[in-house]
Image 1 (spheres, rainbow, N blue to C red):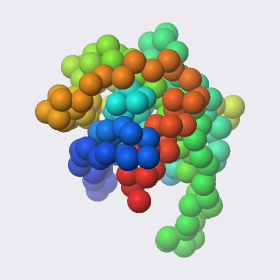
Image 2 (image 1 turned 45 degrees about the vertical axis):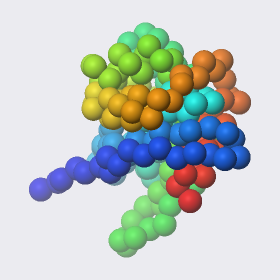
Image 3 (image 1 turned 180 degrees about the vertical axis):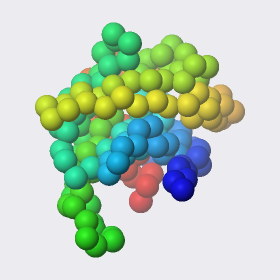
Length: 172
């Protein structure tokens, strides 16, 4: 029997260094294979806007470079690749590839009502993942509850890097 779980804790943190409020959602297992999984967390920053943080764990490197959803390409930035520790021998060496998918306000709001199915494409393969609408609604609800003003960033690597740095600060 396989039971899938996810951490659904949603919180608001003030990043004093960036001067931004960050709403972070818990990671959801958006894709699971035999020995690999994609964990995705929705986030919002008053400086960078809406995004999805991705973490793909697998014994193989996919080298993701693009994110697509039903013919529309989203801005995707690879943020890190880390080797993971082997906990239960015998095991294959695992790698965690992390990235950020930027979303516009309207796209995030639509995902809050329909969910979000997308594909990550890399040099070594591709995967199709799905996020439930509730993950997006939780971020919007907390953003609205705290009266946070929407950011209007121009999508790009600089925005993704700032968002990744601020959410990494939240985890420490």
